[in-house]
Amino acid sequence: QVQLVESGGGLVQAGGSLRLSCAASGLTFSDYTMGWFRQAPGKEREFVAAINWNGVSTYYADSLKGRFTISRDNAKNTVYLQMNSLKVEDTAVYYCAAGITTARSMGARPPNYWGQGTQVTVSS
Image (tube, rainbow, N blue to C red; front, side, top):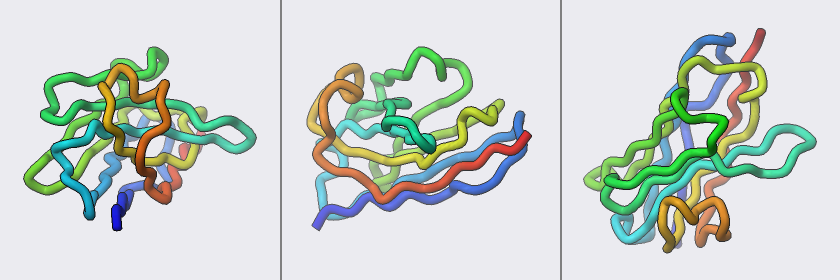
């Protein structure tokens, strides 16, 4: 079956960096647009970033442009999220997702598959 397994979350001080990874299995990775979402306590899940099948097209939530970078390695069936200049408000569970869609549409359409999430906590 399809599995998306996130890793790389943890506790970091404000201003620091983290790189999340999501390893995919059970699907033809290069067929899918990959994305990251996050859900903070008491809030709805929100779109973070997406990348199309070959990495040429990326799309970000407006509030995160310039601090977060999404990338993928199709040879390793892995998508990454580099997060820099982290803020306390970036604290959330971060979810990896796979969908048959465009990067721009990833946030508007329910993905086909979700990972289990990884906790990111940014302290002040």
